[in-house]
Image (cartoon, rainbow, N blue to C red; front, side):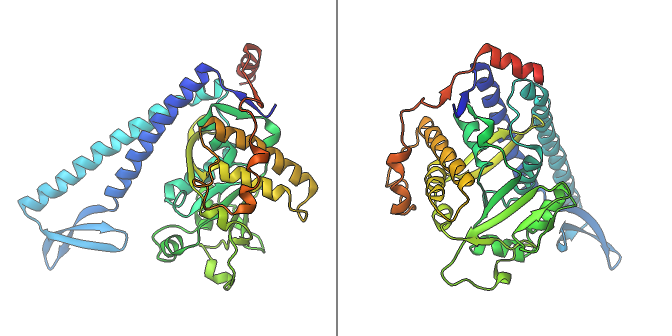
Length: 349
């Protein structure tokens, strides 16, 4: 058995939390985008002027008059109301954390969830950084109503795929966003890069690896510096960087939601199958790659995603050739929940 089906109660709770979290996340991002900086009075040549301040950028809005006073008051009132709304939404979500844990929905390891949330908050996740490797399975199960068996999920590192094309690089170089290392240190100050520069590790030995597609004409390492972390060039990742994206809200070990942006599960499955056949890879990893590929391929079918060559046009023939091998009758690997299984989970919680 590779995964277990969620009960109806678990599905209802998960869907409710996902919808609430998605609404809060949209409202929070909109609030932060429209309320950057502040408004303040500044005395210039003996007169007061209203300024909009955003970091080092200050924009004059005019001398102190009834109009500018009303402008500042309206801004502050709107900001207070919107902050209160976003805070209330977030509290309602967090109040369900205990229930989520009791129902066995808390899945994503805590350190990974904290890192993923911070990359989401910074705006990098889904806009230059994407989750690949084992942690992507938590997103796939969160959308499909199943949970993978533990042996498919065990890992001590988080793999992030970096799209190093202009948008991400310019955003970091232009200081519009924290670099990758600083973002990690916002979560845990002990994160530091190792000698190979693509890997950051904290004091507990948790790794975050950042990888990118290898280019035909590799430039200098400095060309790919994304704020203290230099992604490692890996052959074959161009296929994944050009594949469709997959987003889902899963539940972390603390019982709170975590939004995840990954690659399409079909691309994941086909790529994992291809990797499992690379003789240079360790045998024990190849066997796990093949098992993950088969499980994720079935989840993709459960989600109604077809292994259609037109839809997967970004993938090369050598990956698409694995389609026949992966496709099996839906339900072959699913085990329905049992009352005994659910009771055990609640007791442990």
